[in-house]
Image (tube, rainbow, N blue to C red):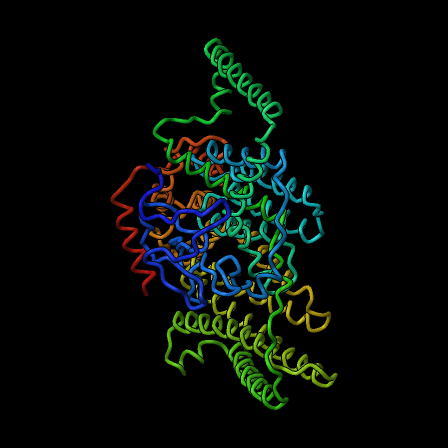
Amino acid sequence: MSDQPSGVPAANGANEVDDRPPKGAVRGEDGHEEARRGEATPGGAEPPEKSVRTTGKPAAPDGRRPGATHGASSWAAYEPPPPPAWVTAARPEEPGPIGTAALWAVLATGVLAALLLGDGLGLNVLLAAAPAALAAYFAGRAAGRGVRPWSLVWAVGGAALLLVPALRDAGWPTFLALAAALASGSLALHGTRTWRGTLIGCVGVVGEVLPGALWVWRGLRERADGSRDRWWPVVRTAGVAAVLLAVFGALFAGADAAFADLLAGLVPEVSVSDGPAHTLLFVLGLAAALGAARTAAAPWRWDRVEGGRGRPRGRMEWALPLVVLNALFAVFIAIQLAVLFGGYDKVLEETGLTYSAYARQGFWQLLTVTLLTLVVIALALRWAPRGAVRDRTLVRAVLGVLCALTLVVVLSALRRMELYVDAYGLTRLRVSVAGVELWLGVVIALIMAAGVFGARWLPRAVAASAAGAVLCFGLVSPDALVAEQNVRRFERTGQIDLAYLKGLSADAVPALDALPEPQRSCALRDIADDVLDGDKPWYATSYGEARARAVLTERPADRITSPCGRLDREGRSLESR
């Protein structure tokens, strides 16, 4: 009996194959035979060599199935479309494996973030960011990148911004400082020069977190192949050292109370209940360090992306609207000068506005004017013709006059805010928008300087001025500034908004300490509860909080209730007028 299954064509010799199509086969368009999808040959045997089986793979974009011989086309020949030109221009080359020094620095960042950042923000932010900076330095040096002057400027500026949490207790200047420090560090790693590169480079390090993780994973896999003899002794030695420190440290702490107190102050307390929070901080610190190292090794070159310029317009088409706008600015400034010399009383009598309405309304309108002027300048630079010398001279003249008049508008807006604050006190919002208006004036001055000396340095100068403004904002302590101004106003007018002052941070304590009783205790009561009840370690305590604790410990706030309620109502009623 033959072992050949029934229904299967038999071979008529070693090299003879039955060319007849199997049962159920169909003839394709190109003349080749193709088995019907889902049908097997009788008996389960393989189809003949000249019969082409379907594979179940998805069809190619042209509608034909891979594996079928449709002429010269096949799935293997299909190529995905190329990336856009801007991606090709900006994409960096794939970096080499991460170095050992950078890898240890990344791990140290995650560990320090998990151990130090859970108790609050202070000097610990700078301590946790230091190994991340080292990771970026080691990765950049391994990739052959050097430290350029502007990169050094951004790095020093970012480190200075990280000192704000160590100096100030207020949360809002701290948030601005941390955001500006992240932008400065990202710019230090990218090294950009254009407007597009500066804007994207401020947040470019965030997009490198996931590529950085994949980069480290590939590097670890490469190192693990045949390198166990190198890294295992290091791990073993570190483990033995950690065990020895834990055992003998615990014994010494039990033998001497002074050493125990010193050890407790130096070593962060870690509890099981805080495990998820510390894990999250570890992951965030690790992600920040990975993004920094990956960016330093191979940053995206956004400066290589060429932006399209607007079609140049005719001289009258762009210059005439700006000349009319300059005339409007000049008329407004002339009226402001007349008001300044004629006095505000006459203006208020003629307009029917109150003192507060005149000052408040004027500031917000003038702030909007400053912002819109920057937009007008950007659009004019995009469409103004600059091919001939006369065109360039006209652009500089018209925009220079507009910038000069805008600076006068900035001064007028700041004067309106000064009048309003003098009458109704300073708040966080008022000091913030006044700071923004002042920075916008600096930007306009930089634009004027660029018109004289060239604009190549302008994008980086504007970004540096923004970082410097945030740093100055944190160093001047806005909460302390608000408290000082309101205390001086109380000494002059006897009016104070205690309900608002109670919500300030510990930075305001030295200024509020100058108030008489019971206003002093009413203003400091809630702040004292937050400052004195907290038990933060040294690395999570700011200078402002430590100074407030010293003031309140020496002169505690009285625990009184009824006078504070009455004073709060009087303060609110006075502020609403």
